[in-house]
Image (cartoon, helix red, strand yellow):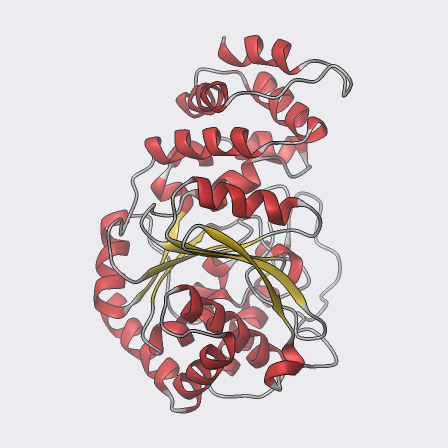
Length: 355
């Protein structure tokens, strides 16, 4: 078995740990996706990588294996931006990628959201839950996703539809409980020709994430340490990021006060008590409805932290799409698209032809 061999190479303690080459990482992830490795070995391999620390070369190997096995939508489509956020979702904060994506699409960008629902270990709220709550849906079919983007400049696709083997790993993810490199790999399944906006957790992973995106050949990208590791900037404090411009890495700081968008609090979901054991926020219909209401409120022009956060996130999309030179221009363009009713009109058009 490939994983048994590579586990010996990784070692059993930090002092003796060795990193995998990109080719070995590719072999490992291809073996995992093939279904030929036991769940016990897969779990041991993922936990070993977590305590060792995953490298850029390893992540590039994993991502290449995943992309080679996936059915990729929209590859080669000009002006496309892929939003890559946490697939196991959020408990406290609403996923506002749908709101920001619709605003950016109304301002002229083409937006593809990678998402899924009920992903362990967190089983939190994702864009998939929000879409259902506002009368839209994601698709499992890459061809359909490409058609939706071509017709409406917006689509969300299930990662499990692109790469069904990832769904088979859910029991392992739930049993391991901790986030593993799988959480990063699933963010890297963007079409190779698209620009990317990726969320990253706090800490040194920001640099690692952007180096992997750069190594995968994306023409433009922004990685940000947004709310709860998402693509949504904070509105109570600054957000750190890194932008790829013509293969150069450029530090990016998003200070909401610079755009008149600072708030005293972040957009948050209401509390409905602790979830039952084995369930998460996505299993609570009240939380799903609340996340949908926040998104609809943004699209109706309601003021508050959710609106401000969505405008900042839409500005990132417009900047990485090349539709504006600065974040200030992006905020202005996003605000016009929202205040003119363009984002709300786009939602209605999508409801019509996706019905």
